[in-house]
Length: 363
Ligand SMILES: [Mn+2]
Image: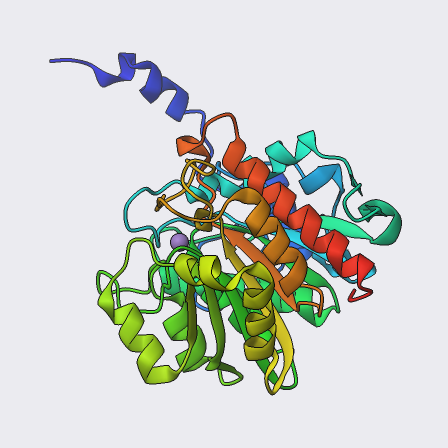
């Protein structure tokens, strides 16, 4: 009979302490102190709201967007104007998963950027205190726990008077992100949602996945209403329930054909009018797959006939000139990308939006 004590794995396991060491305990306490305790109901030791410490997920990196300063102790975030935050979660993906690597991909692609933006004449670092707080700690097998983590984290950033700039993650995360911001705003919030898809069904595979976030945002967040939801660039892969939602709840869906007919300027005017009507603030959600798939292979639901890059940049300049209360760019999926072009597109959008906010004195 084989003696398993001969196995290397058996022998090395004998040296493993079954108790958590004092050093590990100290590191974990520091992780809770700098990254906050997790949302209610999460019990596993070492899980924080902002991923910190020795037990952070393996898919979380150390880089920052645009090589800005890392805000390690989240209690310091209020010293900044803008906080980049990653949400490495992709369990809401319906076909190509992998957007949990999105934040890392975006941060890496941002190495090819400088803070100076000639189209706006703005140096971001001279005008804004920008930090990167790292990533929200997701619970990959459980959307409700992940959403609770996201809401807690984004709420904390916003409550400190800081503009959250969110790096997705799949699009289901927009719902808990907006929920975190909404509780900090005394009044209604409009949403400008730029995407090839409308993502407003009540259920997807019986769960809240990345086709459902605008249903839940408008139906469960008290100060977010479908009348102030504008969806621009839609019309790709489609399910009829998205049209039924728009009809039933009076949201505004603007297809690529509408953009061809009306022009970007007119579309932006409609978007601002609709999103701001009766609202104190507007949230911007950008699904990178609004770009024609020629320009964004690295995404979960690539679609043909979307925007050209310069159309998107023009639209962003126009729709953010009145200010935003938060922004996400989601569905960047590095494993499917080519030469980082999808991540680079996301970086350009972030940099231009922030430059535009500075230029228009909206931050
Ligand atoms: Mn989409």
